[in-house]
Length: 143
Image (cartoon, rainbow, N blue to C red; front, side, top):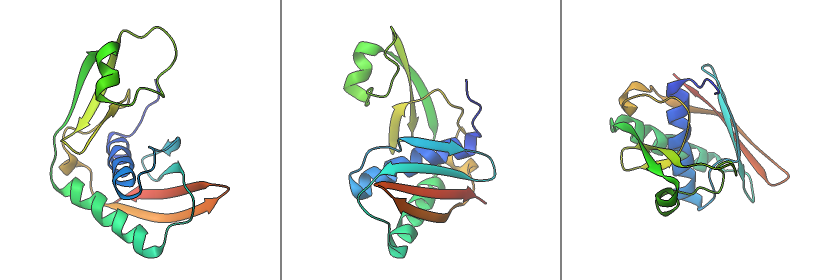
């Protein structure tokens, strides 16, 4: 199992849901999470404006500052498909799925480590963004 920094990994959930809500895009298709800095890649049709970067940053920090509980539950695979997108799960014979909930803001299947409460994350900061060949990359830190 990959070892993720719980603060960064929980932030990645919040960032993904913020992108979904703002732009109607899918969750990141690729990510690299480290304690010092992280990145998420999205299929996207253009670069972000500076204003959009600021809005994303503000929205993610608002969710972090709500102090939402982060919980997990295991559900049967037959039930999981009604609750979350299961298209990225391995094709092997899976009987139960771990679903991680960030309050009522985000819910998705996940194997990573998370904080118990978003208040334990710190401040989210977008360091840079780039756009190339239909891929938007958002690089970020937690201060």
